[in-house]
Length: 205
Length: 253
View 1 (spheres, helix red, strand yellow):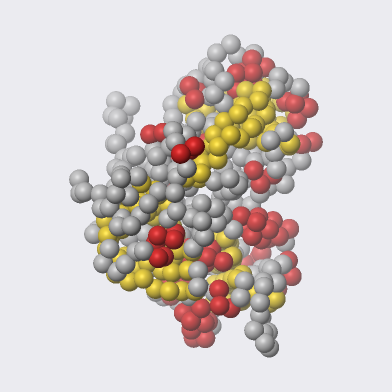
View 2: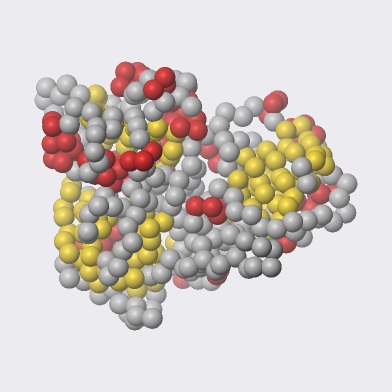
């Protein structure tokens, strides 16, 4: 492999307080950038339902009120976007994937992967391993207030230890599947797993 | 593929070193970097590359920049706007010289893309340096046969902030299938007859190809700009699935 050229005169502006919290190639931002492939959908909670599917059949669906009545979890975490920004110390509230499974009467996940389906047609696939044991939730609040539509409200998937495209906005349906299948971004050159600490940005990384 | 065959391992998008062939001053805050890649299999208009800087202590920083050049060009052009307290853009604008090596990889992205095979009409809507990936589309369209109907609505603070202005104006003068509308938000020249202020619903309704013609929309700019324009288009009954967006903030770069 060719030697990496040193960029003459280039110096880091990274703060020491960020050491160890920024995955490779990431920089810290203090605002909350938005990345979506299309317009923000107008979703009314009165019409909202979240469905859990297995093998084409419905395991359980929740209306907004039913979903809001599930046990609430708060997660303080850093988030990492594949476009290179990292936001430290974010606070989310919602329903953990573990509690969602319990509410659906599933003692353990029936298959090893899920596809998340969203309003507007977005999809992303996530290994169940990355969702259970408190690692992920369906988030409905950010910093204590209802999640803004542009940030995925009323409800988005939150899988903070993977690149943020896995934390699908406007979540409506979670479908179990036996094997990993590419979702929207994974079919467009992005990595199937997306671990920021291993810099799995693009296919083949 | 049979069940026993493993899928082929995807090839990594490898880092490569380009040489800086030219640095073009576009506006007071924007320059274009013209690069000669060692090898380049081409890109589709709208795609971006990642660039990587390495300090002498080994520290590395990466950023994404949209490609401004057409796939037909031999050289690769990136357009970079200054982020005042940024780590990478001040280096690219102030320190990088012709002949320097610059590490990059790509092309990346497959959604916010237009090629001539998709046809038209196309409505391109830019906020500030959000023009960059749209410029790659227009330059590709220029090299395509048979006028594909296109509109560019370009919102900038002032005429002096319009990137690629000479080229856009020249295209608009000679190409009857291309319409160019500037919206100047902060400062307008005397006797300005174009749009004053932000892009609004009336401007979109007056100039976009009507829904019956099934135009494809590509919107790129700061987050608030893209949010606003895309929701106005949905209000105007354009199909949300025909609206592709690319958002960026000035943060950090």
